[in-house]
Length: 91
Image (cartoon, rainbow, N blue to C red; front, top):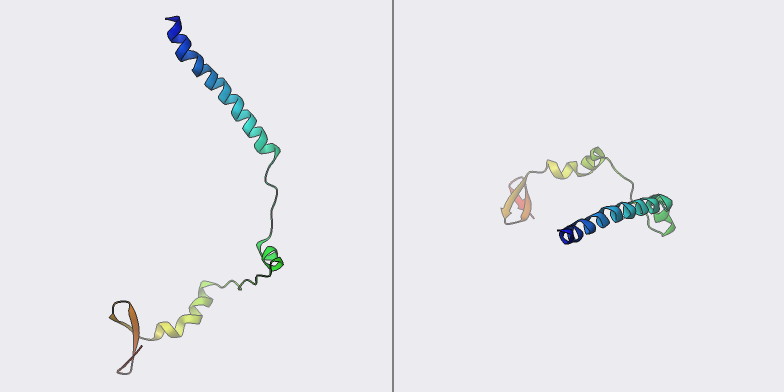
């Protein structure tokens, strides 16, 4: 009977007590060395010589492609899109 308690209870107690100490140490390290490095993406890209495009709104993007949308598009074969212009089909 004592042997059964020794084999089952003792590892459980060690796991619970050891786990609490492990969690305590892990959390203390987390708060001791926090991530404090922050950077601005625009400044970093300019330092590396990368020019970023100006961000556009949905309305500005729509204005750029409005003339393409106004043409009547039809699907001819498979994935080839062409538009119909006054009786002629142009690819």
